[in-house]
Image (cartoon, rainbow, N blue to C red; front, top):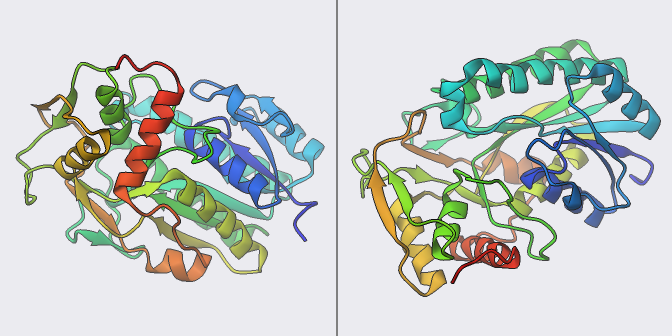
Length: 332
């Protein structure tokens, strides 16, 4: 029933976007991709998937591509994602994330897009009072990155009240891992993602791994995060499209596993998976970091009819290690 419904994936050559493209193909759907390749990898987009190299703020190119491909849905991931960088370059983040999203949403309304899935973030919650947050928890971002995501959520919410479009904002928690089939993974140079940095250190690609602060009010002094395997997150996007396609209204949904691990717990697990110690050092706290964040995923499981396939921290780390080795850059 979905074969004629094409889905535009913005940022589809990036880390999460490329996994979503493969998940859509695996589900028999028809993705098309726009990416400016500022951080994306063109080779991650299969040859049979229509591709346009462009910025989403370029309305003329975006709308022409939507018309040409007869898209009915959009999954929007294009944007900047480094929390600490956003505190140093707030205007850049409000432009790349909020202004560009405004332009894309406007183009989607103009072209009659019916369903819109937005890549949001748990950063919208800031430092919550409760360790586990639900979609109705207070939003109070502590970084321009978080605010840029929350502003886009609000834009979508207001637009969907007056236009014939419905949307789901998926609030990602900590995404990690790589495609089990080895088709794509994280390629970001000098990545700040915890598990990628750990795996690169384990393989000799970094001299050491930095723990940014060990004096937080947590059991072992390090920050706590809820990790979700990127392939499970990609499946959630397919499920979100199905949800909207079945006639349901707009929603905001957390995407995680509902379990928290401290940075030290992740390091310990990585050393077990690696079979050897990993050189770590404790550094100062990092600007914009949240102390503890774990998702209440009740809504995700109920609304999306979704269940994880890779819910195991060791397996997430193993898939990341396998991906890094696959790149052929390891020195050990």
